[in-house]
Amino acid sequence: MTIAVILVASVDSQLEQEIAEAGAEYAHLAGLPKALLPITGGKRVLDYWWGAIEGQRRISDVYIVTNAKAFKHFERWSTSRGIPARNVVNDGTTTRGTSLGAARDLRLALSRVDYFEGGSDRDVVVIAGDSLFHREFDLAALVSDQHVRSGNSLAVSYRLGPDEDAATRGVVEVDPSTRRVVKFVEKPSDQSTASRLACPLFYVLKPQMVHLLPAFLETADAERPSLGSFVEWAVNERASPLYALRLPGVFRLIGDAGLQEYLDLVEHFERVDSPTWSAAAGRGRLTARAYARVGLFGNPSDGYHGATIALTIANFWAEATIAPSERLVLVPHPLFDPCDFGGLADLHFISRREGYQGGMRLLQAACKRFLEFCQDRGVALPKRNFTLSYETNVPRQVGLAGSSAIVTAVVRALMRFYSLDSTHVPLELLPNLVLSIEAELGINAGLQDRVVQAYEGLVAMDFEKAGFDARGHGAYRAPSGPSHPGFATYVLQEGRAPACPRLPARTAFVSRRTDVRSRRPADGSARPRPRRRREQL
Image 1 (cartoon, helix red, strand yellow):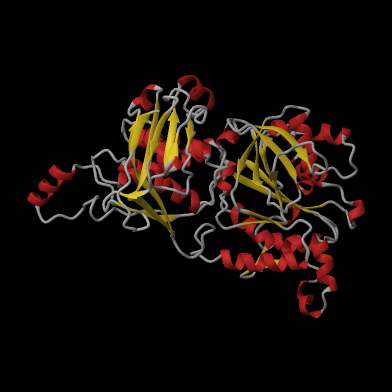
Image 2 (cartoon, rainbow, N blue to C red):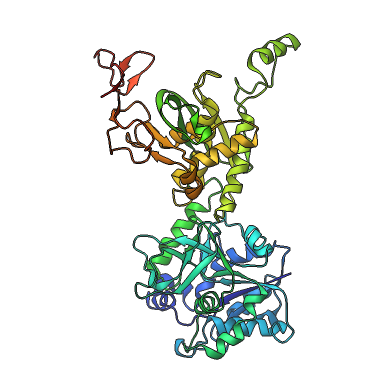
């Protein structure tokens, strides 16, 4: 079983001081510890954590470490929620100058269960009680994460904002292939790391790391050692395994926030605590689109480590629409996923003509593999449900990559819904993910279609084996840019196509973005139909 330790021992924070000086308007907040300030609907900061903890079967004991000034406040809060008074630990400090530091506070809490003397083998979840998270935060997923189950400690990370100072956070460097933390720097004040991945004070620590704490405290140089400095020492000096999961847009840190920051935080949570609010979609829905593709040269050599050129066309597309909902719902298409027939003869006719393979299986497989991909990449998805549907006008079974267009649109919709970007799902790996979804369903295909639908426009692709194996993906060149889903003009000249060195060196292809059905340019003008020319110069 797991022990949870909530650290709320900071004394005389900036926020508490500004509230005391703010006058009668905020008199009802004066004297309250930072972690017990109200946020929304009568919920206090610490209530958010308690709501996530109390329903977790794996967490058997909860300890709260506070200072002498706030002890009575937290004792009363704890007993009113069923936490025994003896689990509220007073570290005896009354001023910032006499505070012990989070590392010593953690040891003080664990001494209540004879953790070190008894050689305990229990995991320890350590939480900063003055941090906030959205209702979508999935504590259960973190406590039971695959790395934790494999005997490794776990941290969560997020990408620092452009105006956020790394010197106020613990910063990690992470191996992208394994998600193991290769370097931890507590509050870097120099150029010791270029990483922008920061760790809030939330850790799932395995016993092997926790039992290093007494040795660290005996040698710690700092008068008030932080928990981050302990983790830094354990990772960098003792090679204790620590893995990091990224949490996109979940945490909100109070830290040394002032009164105005606190008021802004209250306003933010009043908005996002709405049952229908989604961090990605607000109160509405969003739609993602992917286009059909035409192969120009090299098809199907993508299946044999060859090189190809293909392009997307704007006339034919697939769309995925996603909206927040209480339960996860996949909506069958009324035409392509028929469930209602006029009779056996009607069912027989439709089945003979259309077959049995609509889009529902694509949606379900896409959701399954998307979750697995995020888990493998160390991305912890928020606990957020949705309703997902699709639409397409790509003709079936004519070689325009209609199935992969649906899958690509679904993955893009899921990324936007969960506030993921190319740092979570790199563009060059998106085709691999889409192909793995179709492979899940037994669809045999190569990467060409998925690459051109990911990059959009005119794309040159090289799947040369040695390079592919080294990178984990091919070499892709999209001269038309991702903002042009239709035809584009591009000339491959000698020395201009390093991504595809095995293409004819002076092959020229000239085209124009065109509406293929009307044979008019996309702007609707009456210019004559552009000719495509392929010639050896």
